[in-house]
Length: 63
Image (tube, rainbow, N blue to C red):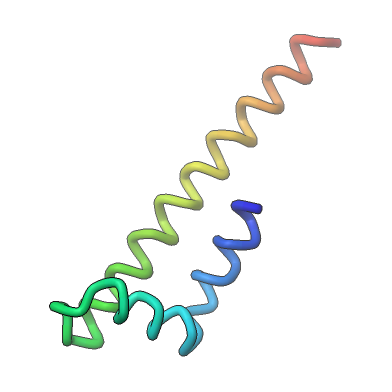
């Protein structure tokens, strides 16, 4: 679920850019739109990495 959203955002496709543009009507600069997408992508990646570490620790502890 998070991985799918991350992959979609990381692709920076026109649908993602348009969705971000619609959510932020005050932002008109293409560069700012890309920065917002990349920021969200980075936060998702950090969250995915954190959850991966938690699962690995839980698996190691359960063995």
